[in-house]
Length: 178
Image 1: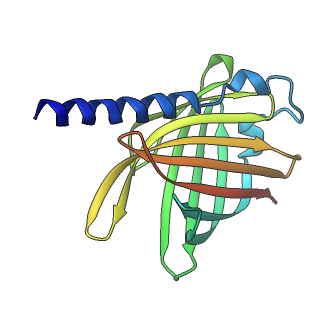
Image 2: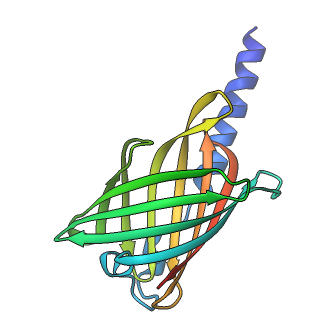
């Protein structure tokens, strides 16, 4: 029994160590151009095209998103309408708050607690826990979400999804501002 506990704790420690080593530092993007002004980019109508891939890299879901966004002062609303390749739809409405130092918080109906993030250079990085329905169950999964402004109209987004520190898959998106 003690050996099993030791093996389990060693395996769990290894997972935590490996996931901790893999994270990026947003400071590395401080000088990157074009500079991302989040309230400016996420203002108006945007289209997004994305895929969810599992751990092996296989595409599990394809989707498009119509985003209608607006800001009043330091408060932003991002109304996302998802349409999946199988015809199903979903809506998520983000309520963002811009804080000093390029920091942001966000809330949405299916987000557990509060999302926190920072924008620096051409990059926005944030973390949040999403309640994700799978079949008849709902799982709380953690998102490590990175967005990179490529041009004034195009932004790329890569988010890693984890549960208990184990990588479940990735979401890749391209945003196009109208």
